[in-house]
Image (tube, rainbow, N blue to C red; front, top):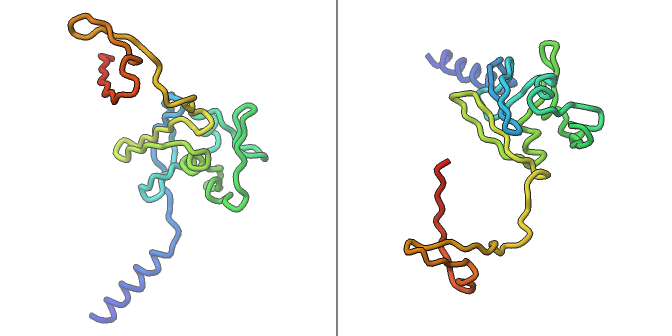
Length: 167
């Protein structure tokens, strides 16, 4: 019994040191609000990491891997040389690209639904608009009795706005 237990512990220890094997999956990538079906994609051990072929990278995002980095037209993001293996690898005669790692590099939010195998990529830091000021624009709306009120009428006071839209 002891030999069997220690053999099992040794086997589990050895298995834990082996690199994760990525299996091919079908995935949906939503990038720039466009959904693209990717088959095959890889999601090692069900993590939030998404590896796609470089051909699918171009198809889903219009980015291409070039010697100077990951580029789309004149826009180019260099990949850190020390982290090259985190972004690119070759497997089964294909070059794979870690799209989620790239999103982290360019400060792009990612939402992942594991059950649906879907990844949504938000706006990159270079696409996000910054507020010119924290001052809200003035506007005028009628109250329930039809009397108009402007936001500027409440300057210096705390205002709680509730909005609603049917779309």
